[in-house]
Length: 583
Image 1 (cartoon, rainbow, N blue to C red):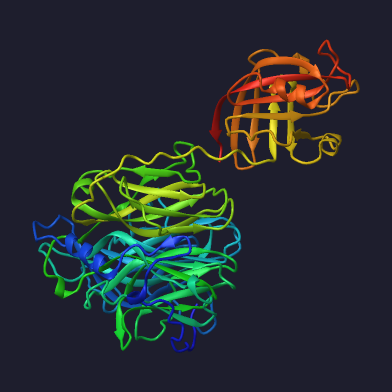
Image 2 (image 1 turned 180 degrees about the vertical axis):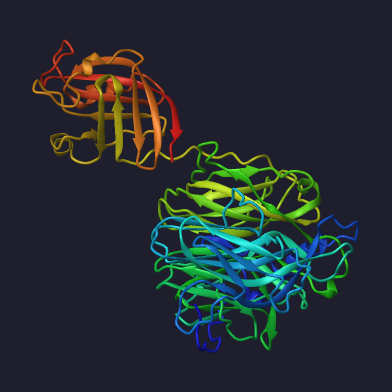
């Protein structure tokens, strides 16, 4: 996770003063003048300071905790073991950290011990563990990092792992209390995030390269830190990425861990630096991947003047959205939205939160934005496969309608809020997003007919080979469940047996269930029955006699509905009743 030496920054991939147009499927949506103008609007005149408010104080990034057993490595780092799965890390006891700090920004890395699925919760030391999570590991993850903004308890934080793992904690900064307006350490959140770096327009940065994020003209010269999202795209090898101030050496810390072939994002709050090439941050790439850097805002310096806007009010981590409670994932192109309680809904410009997606269906990305305002083409979190659970820290602008999460992919969405930044919420300017229905359920399916005591696989392919192998054939060219049309299934029914031998016993109103490979379950009810010839046109014509979404079961039959003759077909049609998300 560190390097003894780093190359000179030869991979200067994007300079903001020459940006125009878009990069790939994501657009750079704000120019320098527009971004600074938007920032100015958010810095209102000073007014009464919110109780519990605090300002951000950046520190030199340092490692506080590393529980791995490594020969020659120092032990302790100011943490203590409270059990194999529980560690406590002191923050205000660290050298150079203000003793009055009320919250901290940490980079937390969990290193798997091969125990499989896991999650880690970070919370104020000494408080009961909340029903939230800070990062998640899948069975295949070696190490996963996430940014954590967290209220302190007794000057420190507790970390609990669901199963035993090693934990690494790096300190990024702290929040200190204030009862008066301040100039430095306030968040200025841009009205919309914008993409400041996208290396996909050029060659892929190699292992050990440095990429530069130039922020000249986009943030004031004395801004103390940039707030954003760092994404590694299709890493060539397992490794990590470190964000650090321009002009300083590569620190012995990391922000993002990624496996070979993965695309993964992490929230960052990184101290700014400058050299002859200007103001910004550098990204040390030890995984060989394309890099994206989306800017959310910045922490002010003294030139912004005193104000009470942008101060941070930490809270005990609170779960405000969990689509698992409604048993309905967000599907492709869908949006989940949640409102915020008082006083956040009227006195905040942004929230610090942890976004988690779970039980993913396929690859995709997820974008947080102020609810019922225009969404921009940036991302907060990426997934690369089905069945993943991935988390990422985000600082997100809010509106008077709350926070929305757009899904370019299907998954459950979970949002845990850790605190809020004072200011004015945006005004909702559009109606609530209308989520499209999920696409047709992918095959293979499992069909269940309780009347027949039947549970049977449904697959595509050659009809004869499929039914002769003991499966049910999905008739080529007919619909998928969930598409609103007619799906046709064909299976064996012979005098000697076959799964559908007793199809004639199905009664009106009997149910048929289809479970899809992406964990949807469709319910249908019998509404019709027909005898036709063996010819495809007659068969398909009969399956379409009843409108709406239907499933028709086709088998060989005698003219009296009994088994069986190759000259006739028995067709039993079921109409759609409902569908359930069982993922």
